[in-house]
Amino acid sequence: MSFAPLASPTQPHNRSPANATEAVTHPDPYPYYTSLATRRPFGFDASLGLWVAAGPEALTEVLGHPACGVRPAGAVVPAALADGPAGEWFGALVRMNDGPAHSAMKPWLNAQLATLHADRDTLVRLHDASQAACADAYLARGDAPAARLDDFVFRQPIYGLAALLGVPASQWTEVHEDVRALVAAMAEAGKPSPRADVLAHGHRAAAALRLRAARWLDNDAASDTWLQEVARRAAGNDSIDFAALTANVVGLFTQTHDACAGLVANSVRRLARGTNGISASADPTDLGVAIKTVSDVIRFDPPVQNTRRFLHAPAVICEQALAPGDAILAVLASAPPSATPDGMAWTFGTGAHACPGRSPASTIAAVGVHAIRQTGEDLSSLASGATYHPLGNIRIARFSA
Picture 1 (cartoon, rainbow, N blue to C red):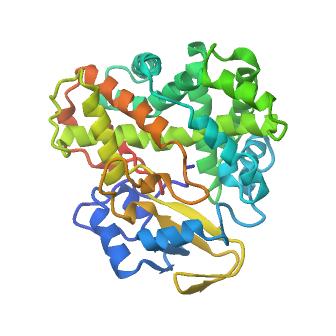
Picture 2: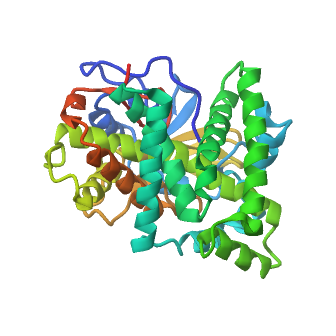
């Protein structure tokens, strides 16, 4: 989920970020994160009105603490979304709920996601989806390479996830448009004075996506695909609520929209700069280049840089007494990268609400990066870019002005 945009998308190299949310769009926030984790791993930031947790020990304690919820107590749904389809959908998301609403669906859904595998047929479908995203980005943005790339990094993960799950190709464009509108409404709902038109588009998109998801699960998905199999398993399990399942299938797309866009965009920027020791001119047919680059981004320039937790009960956390209603910013990007590419990936979180999507997200992003390299675009022209989309928790490289 995206939070309200920041006032400025970037900061100069020579100025340290003022706080942990400003760091998300800084050209190089990692010295700041290291300093934060070293000098004050847990403390109150008056400029944010939040407690801030940094470093692996503080993050582990916060993300695993039973008093910490993913939404404020009594406010599962943002007030601006409450009256309408987007609010109904949001309230059914397992990742936005604690307690019974979370534990009833999350383990089952995680088990279903674990069945997604990147076999040869899957890679062919993802390649086709990426090519379709390239073509539609051209239709949307025209001849400007940087503008097309900015479109592609959001479009391709949605097309890729749709292909991976079994959504018919004829629906990919409309699904992307609806997901974009719903994500925009979620971000708008976090603003002091949200725009009514953006919220209205979000409500319409939420209703349309849930109807689509219901049809996918009712035999409108492509044959022999994940959606068909999930529908079959859900039908044989009396504990699975069909309405909640449709909401959480839609939730897979909204969660993918920004987070996977960050994987693709940050990987392209990393390749352009040759940061991982791979030249931008390396063999464009080598999928391994894209796989390695995405793996390095997960470790060294992760998309999801922070997340929030809210106190549902009094608690002592990191030797500090916190009260119900207090909020914590958990700075995931402040933890050091794991020693191996397959090790701990803080950007996917930890604890009960850890994201189970590392494998499919990495695969979708790698195929997207591979598709960009196959277009023959001169990535070296992007090497000097230092702009990021103005989000408070997800780091997504931006290529056009």
